[in-house]
Length: 334
Image: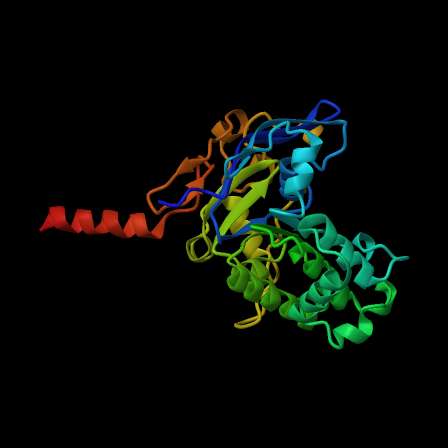
């Protein structure tokens, strides 16, 4: 059985003494595409910024992060810098702010190749042009000496993907890579990420609010809420039969393209302030299924019979289990 590429255990983060991540356990297998979904403020980006040591000094991070045989927990800066951009690369949310506006894009790509693969001069330029071609930048040679503002938003995102691939990473973390792009460009970026992952046999963590995008590019999904994972499982299983009330609420809030028109069903309220979390289940104040038990007890993330993991005392019914119980009752009556 192949070991995991990344293993995160009991990852906790606090800012100025206020906990924002509450014991994240997460595995990423080689070549796997994992999706992280949830509302803003649930801890999706913080999880990976903490794992890579990219949080500010005021953040207190505890727990274990392993990349293969390398322990990143409390690792010195030199070790983290050898991993960041090399074995693990990250695409940040806003490509326009991530690219240096006063440097030509070709120079920025060559810098990434020099840092992560030791390429310089003509070798670096040739590989930079190859990366630009790979991510679909038209007339790469003619646009090599242009500045970021001379590219469209979608092309800037492609350039960020090219820079992330410069170190030939084992894992690519895509943090909201389609934010602020129109629908057509979003589809192109998602197709590009899927193609590159397959060609390079690269694992990917895809962080997004867009459930449709996650379904398109991911094989497994973790749903996060208030700094915890509340449900995780294979894409087909979790999207067809979501069982946590929060996951169910995310799907109910999506507009329907087909069938009769009906009002959207929003999730009432907002993600709780980390400084004033409920004593029990963090989702209980917004949950129509909550009972007295939920107000006082925090559910653990436990494995289920269908292979998913779930943190809920009163989840949505499991159709598969109900069918099995019905067959058992019919067998007893015969």
